[in-house]
Image 1 (tube, one colour):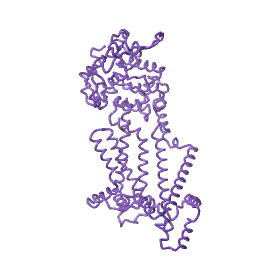
Image 2 (cartoon, chains in turn orange, red; image 1 turned 180 degrees about the vertical axis):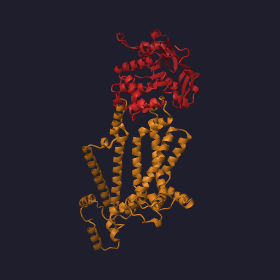
Image 3 (cartoon, helix red, strand yellow; image 1 turned 90 degrees about the vertical axis):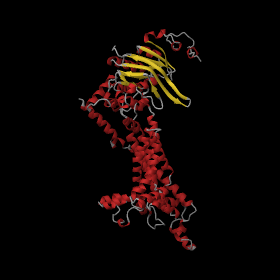
Image 4 (cartoon, rainbow over the protein chains, first blue to last red; image 1 turned 45 degrees about the horizontal axis):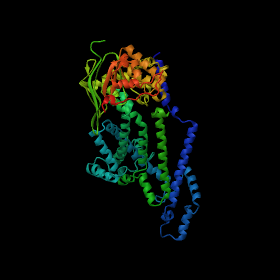
Length: 358
Length: 279
């Protein structure tokens, strides 16, 4: 008699957390698809038209400044730039939906292929970066809030402030000087040592996962060796933001009445902080973490340059400088999709974590 | 009544720092309490809520509390370590908070919150905890406790939330219950139900009760003894039955301001504060 209701209760809770309960209805799903498509097309439109009005001539970038007028005109027609702007745009949108992002002028390869190469490099670095940022930033923020006003709080706040104010390239260079050149703890710039290059066939494009998939642990550890310093530096920047936000969310929670209720019950301070104070702030924290992650996925030009990292930030910068509009558009679309995806993921996590939003 | 009182309090002072120096919100409060029902009445800011929190040593920093004597059932509360004090909170002295909307954790189920109060103090098998929680929910007159256990606080009404709060605070079977304005956030129609419930449970279990309220009539109805607080001090201490014969001008002023059913006065008198504060 006593166990029967217990199983019933557990079943109910499981039902609330199962994917079935979270799966949006068909209507909601359709709404999501439409909104996403509109966002996507809007993003394309803005990037496309900005790309066409900037005073850089993509034709000139292809033919060079010594070309004759005939050569210039021929190239212009070949690139389709003689057509009306709207026709160009519609043609581009059509191509994108068929998976064709056009041809890159600067690398002379299809943009889609380029992106499949550079985005995983950034993804790998950003993912490890955000793991470090969350793994350290959240506990530090909670700790600072729990010890508000003490020296612990002050030290964490100064540490987080440094993350806000230190320039990325400086920290990257100093990191290389100290940990690579000086102490020799980590490997230098690049994704792997030169003699490991090309040893592992790229399947996902994530060097460490590819190496792990084929069981080549030597390459795996070498790739991690190269990744750890730039990822730690990125992690430090997101840590700064995450720790500050966590601290202020926590301070707000710790002033709530139900925290006093928990103390009245005699609950230990550890549980007061983590089970009562921290649980409700997971929802706003997801937004903060999602935005930080998306920002890292845009690629940090500074860090990628200092560490010779062939990521999307680098690619986008080179493309911009060469008026390589197809590449710029393609990279922008990837970054835009990442933002849309992360936002959607946050929404789903909200619903799992906050009973009030179900 | 047992020879040694449940709670002895002498000269309790609670103070908070301000730019102009420390301000005392409780200025030397003393009383003894047996297993009886004591009412503390006073206006906002009179220090009555801080008294309740100080008994649990939960005045939050930068606030500070001192007392010449604060002894609960032979235990000197001021000399207990923080750990020992935590073991005592909830288990022996408990407090019902004011507004269930804010005092229940929004992201924990009701069952989990009540169970936590029990688990903190007793080592029990999971099944026994569940049985005790169900039994307690029934004791606070919640129909269908199995369903309610799985609900979140935003899914229940204020009156039900407050009954959950009572269940949570009484489940470890404390000896002293402090009820800090337990009904001021509730509808009038639910107030009596909740207070009757507290009253019944307190009598059944032979607990001591400190009922903190701003409502004179309410306190007079549910308590044996009444302390009237004003500006951090006790201005009147009497048996509930003798309230109408109170002598202090503040109490008299409060009593005069209470509206009555068969009212013939055109205007309710306001408090003339100069009568006792000397300003």
